[in-house]
Every structure is written in C-alpha cells, then in structure tokens.
Image (cartoon, chains in turn cyan, red):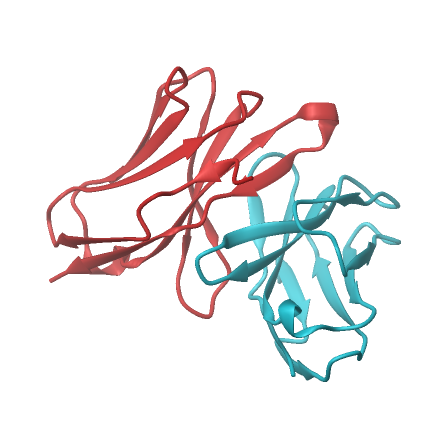
Length: 110
Length: 114
C-alpha cells in the first residue's frame, strides 16, 4: 500500500520551461490537493479536486493548472515556470477530513 | 489574507515538560480543525483533530483544545519528548459546498531539548 506517491522528487527547470508533477493515490479517496511550502508561509493550497473530473482554485492558483482525469491521479502543470515557483510541492488526498500527504517534490526554477 | 495563523514561528521546551502550540483562525465557517506534524524532507502526517461541536480531544500525550468564541485552538503535548521535535501545522476545513477545502497555518517549529 503506497498511499500517496509524487513524481518526480526533485527537478530543476529553466525559466519559461514547462513541466507536470504527478500525484497518485491508491486509497480510493475523492478529495485531492496540491500545496506549496515556502519558508515563513506554511502550506498554501494551489488547487484541489473533490472528485474525478473536477478541479477548483485554492489560495495561490496563478501560474498553475491541474487535471483529474482519473480518480487516483491529480496532475499539477506549470506552463511557463518562473523563479517565484521555486518551492516544495506537496500532494495530498482525503476521503473525509483527514488528508494524507506525499513525500514532496522539490522544484527549483533558475 | 491568512485565514489560519500560527503566530509563534518556533518554540523550545525541555524534555518532560509541556509543549503548548497555538493557532488562531478568522473564518467562522470552519467546522473541523487538525494538527499535522512534519519532519524535514518528509510530507506532513496527521496528528489529532477536533470538530467544532467539541472543545477538547485527547489522544495519548496529545490534547487539542478549541475555543470557538475566541477562534483559537491549541495543541498540548505532555510530556514532551525529543522525538516530538518537528514543525507543527494547524489546519482548518469546512464543508462549504462540499468542497472540504483544507487551509493550513504557517507552522511552528518545536524543539524539545534533552
């Protein structure tokens, strides 16, 4: 039972490049979330999904897009990466109120 | 606008003593509150939660208190152990439109000294 798996774990991008972060969960959870963690800012919600085929904006959605084509996967896309998107990204899933987190993706944009 | 606030970035406590971590929120719609613990290079893990219909919830050494009128909650750890050293995040959620949006605070770094 893997829980929540994030791919990749580390990535360095050049400004303007695009990439997709993958989150996969094997717990059949309806809710999935993408957060970013920055020093002094805590965990900020980027986008979330309440079920397959649905997505919604969180606190800091600008510069990101998401898709939830399959219930077990939640993809976070950066179309044109900027240095301000250097952060640690966490995915989480939940069936009710308790969310389970992945190990994180450390992204550096140079 | 920060809806969930943890005003103490860090806290240092002696082993065996009580650790008290505080959290304030501004949105009166929140009806469920959680505490998460995070070690470096790992994802946050769930610690304890409380519904807005309660004012206290205990789980072993961990107790969460909720004061709805003050929009304040606290996490008590008794006795504190060196393995408790981590960043603690307070989180709040509400079933507004069945969104179950989970909002986190900025975190408090707890250091338990042996």
